Amino acid sequence: MFVTRLKLPLALFALPVLGLVVWSLAAAGPGQAKQTAGDQTKQEAAPQPAPPAEYVGSETCSGCHADFAPDKLAYHKEIDVVKRLSEWKGRACESCHGPGKAHAESADPKLIFSFKGAPAAKASQTCLKCHAQGLRSSGRAFDAHARNSVACGSCHTVHAPKAKPLLAGVPNGLCVTCHTNVKAEFFRPYRHRLVEGAISCIDCHNPHGSPIGGRTTAQFRASHGNEQPCLKCHSDKRGPFTFEHVPVRTEGCSACHEPHGSVNPRMLVRHQVRFLCLECHTTPGLGLPAGARPSGTAPMGQTPPAFHDLRSPRYRNCTTCHIKIHGSYMSGIFER
Image 1 (cartoon, rainbow, N blue to C red):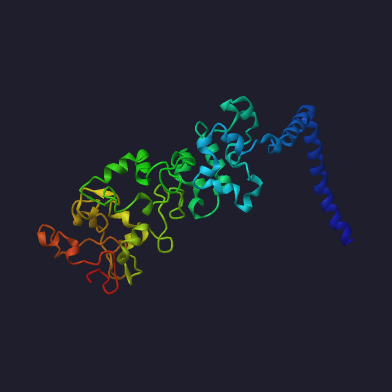
Image 2: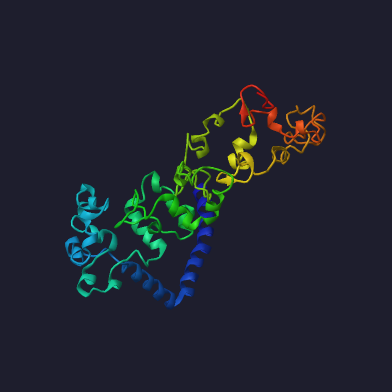
């Protein structure tokens, strides 16, 4: 009796499902079945790697391209000697440009893969067959350069590099080719000394992508345990402090500073310190216990107390008293 009660609901459930399957097969018709079979045939006929007979070897390539022979390359000549790449021994050129038999026999440039006119995604994908690992290119697939169709060959060149590692020019010169607005910022009165050669773009930014901040366009280079690169030089601002200044920890240095250059002293985003502070400190209640705050006010952004008469010059420079504005070990209001 117990078994019968179990089987009856299962049978009632199975009948509608079976009917639905039969109806779907009937509605599909011979056309859809034929299309499905065609799709399967296409998948089975997917392009396969070229057979060894399609390769001619680097010596044949060097007959015309003597200046680019593998033994003259800065780094990629290692393809012929590295054990883990033994399958490409003697075929270093074709490891990047693909099988060269058809090109060698006809001298037709269209019958060999060329990085010069190739789409950015395809050209970069060829490089990433080998260079997809390691910290240098770990975020390449999602970085701002890849999303804006900047190929590896836009900055790198294998055959005639002008700077290490395989760069087509000095790093700063390559960056400002596209980032012209940033180049102008480094000529402002208060700036980081990039023009003088004291720093480089890649000291702070990772052109291949960065784990800091997700998919941000800044692509910061990690420092001190994935913190902002500013702290490599300005280590006294790192902390952790007993009393943290919230914007420093949550928004970073760029909340108050323009990192490349500014028309304001200390590379601030406002000309006077008080105006910068008052952008946040305009709501009563900051630093007061919950019972002491005015009703309905938030615990952050307190306006200056009454004796801070901003009409008087002595109260217009907040950091005259609040000298530890980045964080303090002793004072909750950053006075020491």
